Image (cartoon, rainbow, N blue to C red; front, side):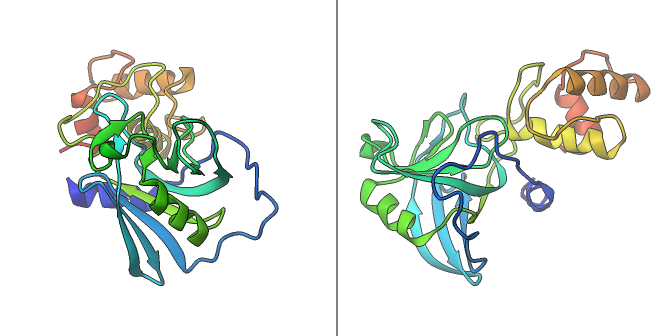
Length: 221
């Protein structure tokens, strides 16, 4: 499974659902620094020229509200964004919701599956990271395909939003079925593509994505 996820991650391009705000006119971040987040280990690594220079323990999304998985960029940086989010906020370019790296008023939650999808850090550590990265910094989030190690697969329906939806859209688009934007949002165009794919491949026509469909698309094994 891990090798498949790595292949998927390398080919995914996540598009921001919100505009770039503060720091929008700054020069794009230097390519020598990037962030790697491991959902299995609940760790965040800051890498420079391919070498790990900082490692932080983090809190990630719960079973029902998993963190996004894929390759993103930091699109916004804010100080004291909202109460409960600690002293620093760094927004990610996930196309299906608002997710960020931020501090927390619940430091005891660090290390667990505890958030609504965001990446939580200790306040002193998020301040440090904030000063070391810029808008445009690449952020790779690696982990279970479903976003949580205890969940083998998820049934996707119209209205679902997740990295898994985006992977399905990518597969359907590559096969010539999906004509919309691969943004992780299961919309009407995605539903139409799923129906046609199921018809053409003699799958049960549900207009949803079940485990059998993931197997057929080669997303699950």
